Length: 329
Ligand code: P6P
Image 1 (cartoon, protein in one colour):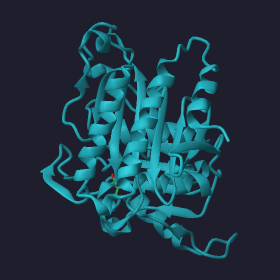
Image 2 (tube, protein in one colour):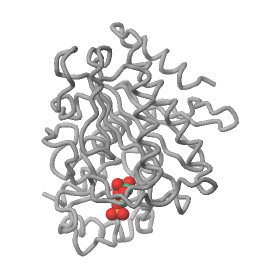
Image 3 (cartoon, helix red, strand yellow):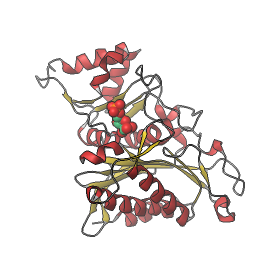
Image 4 (spheres, protein in one colour):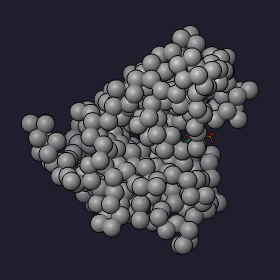
């Protein structure tokens, strides 16, 4: 039974030049996720569910838990002192740590502190998503927007926490994707899924079919394909969609499947955010031998232009993603 912190330290030795800063940064994320996990597990008992009545930069109703999680992760990252800046789904602008030590730090973190938070009130799994880069601006200078607008293929680490029937932290530093399950009696994450490999194909498709009439023709064609009787299984595919990206992607990564959030008339560029949802999830899924595209281009190769930009997002089992793309071209 190896703990997450032991695993992080052990894997640090994979990077000869590592001097513990990334391990320390990951440790602050682990600490914050334990605090958020504790509050989510008793959300119905304390005044922390429901909306704040404030609309966030995304134009969505900010949930009380969104603000709580955002604050916990930012304070944990600031306290550990390894980052020079943070960008969050919940904040319009990125946060700069410009005190003397902050300006000398070499990492930036982008995060969706609580994805799918509207599900909390009905006890459906939610998640945290994070992405870590080395800054490109000069150490000692103020953190710059360019530090955050890097291609996803420049990430040095990415991960998510799924607060579900059990809570898991799944992350990669580019040497495979590994999963850790929280033992609530100890509040400790233990290695439970080393080197996750998504089945190269599967029979689960995840999409909000309520938007069917708004989908591009190729997506409609693929959904109809999934609903035909498959000659191997003699049944149609299974539709599984719970409206929580982390939970939907986590299930599909373990069982095989495809998640789609294409462009619609409500979201002409897609709904999901490139920097702190699609890029980290794409790195995680690719390190588990899956694929992630916007329907044409590999997600990790997209050049970001704005902090909160949205992209169409298709990810999961490689053969399923590749087959869908033949219907989109
Ligand atoms: P819809 C949650 O708000 C989220 O960002 C993802 O977690 C989820 O997959 C998607 O949006 C759900 O969106 O439009 O289907 O409710």
